[in-house]
Picture 1 (cartoon, rainbow, N blue to C red):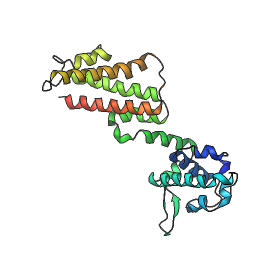
Picture 2: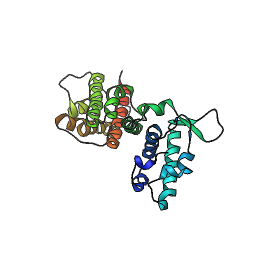
Picture 3: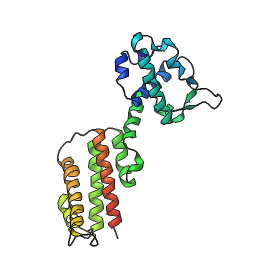
Picture 4: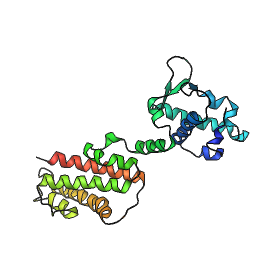
Amino acid sequence: MKPLSQIVPNAQDLLSLKPEEIGGVILEYLTTCYPMEFDRVGRQVFTHQGDVLKGYDQHVREQVKRALMEGWAWLGREGLIAPCPETDNDTCFITRRGKLVADKAKFTSYLKASLLPRDLLHSQIADKVYSLFIGGDYDTAVFQAFKEVEVAVRTAAKLGPTDIGVPLMRKAFDVNTGPLSDKSQVTAERQALSDLFAGAIGSYKNPHSHRKVTIEAEEATEMLILASHLLRIVEARTP
């Protein structure tokens, strides 16, 4: 039985990981270090067989076991492992999805994808940016998403190709003359929506047009969801 310390040499490093990251460690261990067929393995491998924890100090092993069970539970919730139908104990197998992401690089991509559930995105935006997001190209993904919003506004408002950026939004959602302004709403609400579209394009699309902008996955997730929301508003206003 090969020890888990071959993958994570320091127990404190393991304990500092989030449950989903520990899940990745477990998958990597099962597919690279476990000497038996990993289609049938129980959680007791990590809780009752001391050889797995060899290399970790005795005083932290109970903490490590609990952390590993957090990762094990996360794997089950994600459908990366599932109970073996042939047994009535806690024996599990790595699912088809689990085998697809067992590689360390693919698992990292899977975690990134979990930050941005595709179902939350407008389908038009998802088609353009999801692969960019998974690949870590967050600034390009955000730019492309808000470009889709800009194009949709211009088309829906029947404005010209020279209408771009913030001025386009102001013209399309002008409280008095904007073709996408809902005259049934009070003036303050119409102005607020104009401000929202202009602010979003000015903040999230324009800077990416002019320079390299570094953003993190969490920020990109929020921006892409906002772009999807704006695009749905435009669709609702489109004759």
